[in-house]
Picture 1 (tube, rainbow, N blue to C red):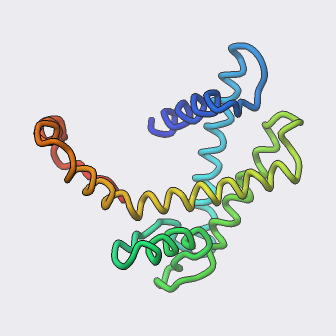
Picture 2: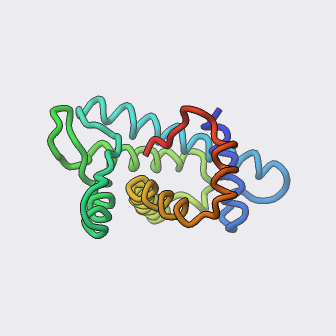
Picture 3: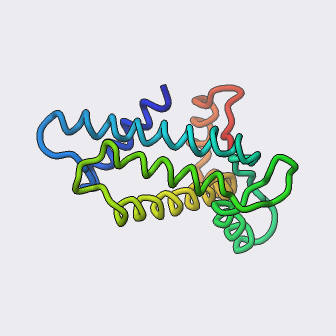
Length: 173
């Protein structure tokens, strides 16, 4: 269900930012949604299952949480190209690189002709690496950001948050 909601969110964001790759009419919404869903599933399959399993690499991001801002930011960004292997040692993140490359190359099967080709695929690959680096930065710093914002939140809103927060929920960052 999160996959379907994520694809819907991606479709809305793509429309809002003028990035729709399909043209004209109500059908373009369905085509864009299907493409977003296929992109997400292909990325999950290649990047979080197939290549990590074959190459014995861990696709998860493990936050550093200690040290200075620059060091933590550098760590977060470099985790796009560095990961841990099954023995816990740092290694080149070939499962990420191959997973992104394969999933983006697969897009050429269902993207319109004007969105296919070496340059478009390359731009999509680079954009995915940038997005992953940004995601790692958010995972690294989200607890700090949340703590700072919460510290400066007026007390009446804090009490409202306490009443609205579901028990036993936590961010997986």
